[in-house]
Amino acid sequence: MKKVVKFGGSSLASAEQFKKVGEIIHADPERRFVVPSAPGKRDADDTKVTDMLYACYDLAEEGKDFKQQLKAIRDRYQEIIDGLELKISLDEEFKVIEKNFKNKAGSNYAASRGEYLNGIIMANYLGFEFVDAADVILFDENGEFNAEVTNVRLRERLEKLPSAVVPGFYGAYADGTVKTFSRGGSDITGSIVARAIKANVYENWTDVSGFLIADPRIIYKPEGIDTITYKELRELAYMGASVLHEDAIFPVRREGIPINIRNTNAPDDNGTWIVESTCQKSKYVITGIAGKKGFCAVNIDKDMMNSEIGFGRKVLQAFEENGISFEHVPSGIDTMTVFVHQDEFMHKEQRVVSAIHRLADPDHIDIEGDFALIAVVGRGMKSTRGTAGRIFSALAHANVNVKMIDQGSSELNIIIGVSNADFETAIKAIYDIFVLMQI
Ligand code: ASP
Image (cartoon, rainbow, N blue to C red; front, side, top):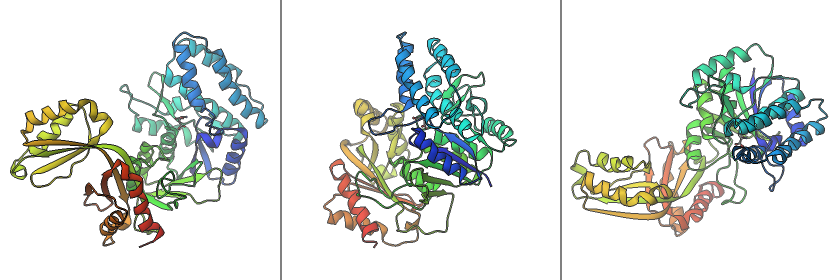
């Protein structure tokens, strides 16, 4: 049995946190491959090392003095080294970093040093081998992650090792130039490593005990989710629920490796299991609720639209021509509505409107802003009658006007459009009916 364990920035923000991580790893001999993030915030007012590196590099890029900023970063690491009573020195590493900053090695290189240095400390602390991600995580010439080449290279390198530390967040082009994933990308590295070594589980350790049914900023102490499928998670993550980087699912999903989200500060909690498929019923009919504000509805009317072949394509072409992606397209007999992100659409709306007129010749176009979309997601909905009915009666009782409904035939989710102002009330009403009242 092999486990890949990834630790997020808050789990590695200080020597004290490192010690918790050490205990977690030593508690289970299967935890053999470790992916660390850079040190995160020690408290709410603190700055993540990654952000310190970006800011420091900006100065270097402008040709300004950055010594003080680099020293502050160095101090963060030194504090960890001292707290763990390690005998290593990062002198040489910091000399190289300073030189490379002066030579404008790029912000990707700069940011990657956060994970790189933390990886060196972690390997030393655990007595594991350090494997530089730049040697094993590869990007192609277009900057896309090269999954297959990486998989082979990583497997060859790791299969000979009893244990190893691979820093998260970055890799390199074929010529060795460092490139990072997008922010939070150590989650992706963990997933890539798990795939390469065919791990039994990918444990992702963070500062919460897994996913919650709803956003705790809206619902007071929402319940956690025990098990969620990859598909459900995609739906919720897309709609704003964040714990794990969106792209972290893909590598492990190919191998059917489950992800277990765990809490470094509460290691006995089971956390959330993210699985391909399960016969375990979710505790409630719904698995989770997530949503986002700031959408805009573009209503297009045309008599006899339903019999005009190609009408929908022409309308969508107007959005495509202006580089706008659409979210949902509910339609009626003589009307179709295109939901788009308001901030993206706002500056281009008149160009889109005239393109729709030119391409599709509608009778009338009407734009309505300030919509929120809410996704109610759950594999349990498929086998349960009346879910939609319950949602709408809960919303009616809460005086929320439903402006749009969209349910895919997979019956995995129901998307509801309400006005921005009703967003929180709507989520509370849905949570209450399914979770608190359990009906
Ligand atoms: N340290 C990087 C960030 O802050 C990557 C990560 O933590 O996953 O985004």
